[in-house]
Image (tube, rainbow over the protein chains, first blue to last red):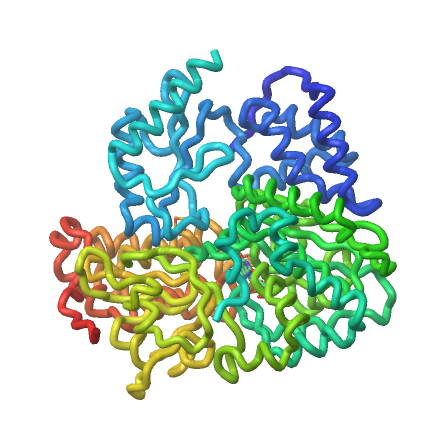
Length: 175
Length: 445
Ligand SMILES: Cc1cc2nc3c(=O)[nH]c(=O)nc-3n(C[C@H](O)[C@H](O)[C@H](O)COP(=O)(O)O)c2cc1C
Ligand code: SF4
Ligand code: FES
């Protein structure tokens, strides 16, 4: 998947810069490249949920490595988004143990409810629906990850509806 | 008997104070003040502890391979990548009793004479990463980490490192590459990490659960540990049980427990959900061979199958399976083996790092053939082709992910060939309903 060039200069806030330098300092002298994954997580969080070309170049400069070293890593790992995503990523597990406990139903239900296909984003930019592989919650199926949290045992329309409503009102409040 | 989760229900056990008040960190006091590194390694060897990450390699033996002579820095890397479908035990341990892992790391690093340890946690476990940092902070404030621990002169720091979402980074050499800030491409072995590991330095990679067993061994002796379980499968094991059972969850069992008891007793899985009958079990994470009911409850010789390395392996791959990671997946009579095999193969195709062509291409082939069969477009020759492709992957790749992708397919065809054929001869029904033909399985209990 191609990454997006925004044409915008990136600058971290003082607080984010402080976090970044703290992350880099964890690794032994001369091994700063090890900070790449945590820095990419931080950057994606700071910059609206995805990594643009400029964002990756920014990380390369922070670590004094070549941009290609960042691109090849960012494209390897499934947690990094190279395209803009909705405010909330609904990442539903579709692997075997979940699939046999209503995991397939959960994907279908969300598709219907949100009026989008798996992989798509709602027109209001609120939700992106994504199917992901096993999240180590197999006994608590069906489940999805939203941001930093897991939501488990989502086995009825009521539970899913309630969760979506909570997210909507949280969004409304923060606006 | 429980040794990892015995105190997991004590209120506040995730905090240092409560953990210590309940005997926590006693193994650090004992190890650092009263034992030598060599003595600890000897105890771990005697304990018979085998790696809990999946391969079951003896932990003490792995530790004794660590190159200490060259004098280069040594590292301990704890594998908390936990991504094998069916497996969710390390998460449980870290979430509920994080100090047990920190305690294990300190005692282990003292034995390995290492001053820096990493915990590589899958990136999706964001809240667990926070829990671990908090526990590390508490331990540091109490003088259990950092410089001159407990005044003994031993220094140790622990870094929690997040992954980026990639199953392959659970493979130890891919994990090391990833920790160095690279793509998770497994390395050729040898050299093994014990000689050339993280940053080219001698490194031990161990699963969370393996390291968490060390405090008990240090405190109670290797001999005592070896008396738990069976002679070849010492100790306890965390089993994460899921699928169509009444009580999915994480259980600590003494190795050697009969499989039938584990599935049907109310103490554990509580039997099959919704009054259905059992059809099949994947006993050790998605990578191990699937077995039909008759072979998971009893070996081909008619002996009771036990939850142990040797009993689950009995019969080899013809009639047996493996304990693996302890990811225990139970299928009821309504589940379709072809669909499940397709699902798992899609997983391996998605997760292949792409370095070796048998794995990169073969997993894609298998996924496409299985998709065809599952959707009623397959022919009998597709089943033979599928068999052929999996055979050509197995043993021909850099890392064991290739084998892990081949085994579920081989075992599904071996034990459920009739169901694959049924998909070919009844394409319309195969499309309409989600389950195969093994509906008439009598369960022994
Ligand atoms: C594809 C693949 C994935 C693996 N995933 C994990 C994992 O998530 N956690 C783990 O501890 N070991 C995993 N392993 C096994 C490790 O390579 C290694 O054997 C293990 O971490 C060693 O620790 P132990 O001896 O304590 O089990 C995986 C192996 C392979 C081939
Ligand atoms: S077997 Fe698969 S995952 Fe392992 S190195 Fe080869 S291509 Fe990568
Ligand atoms: S299969 Fe869904 S969390 Fe493991």
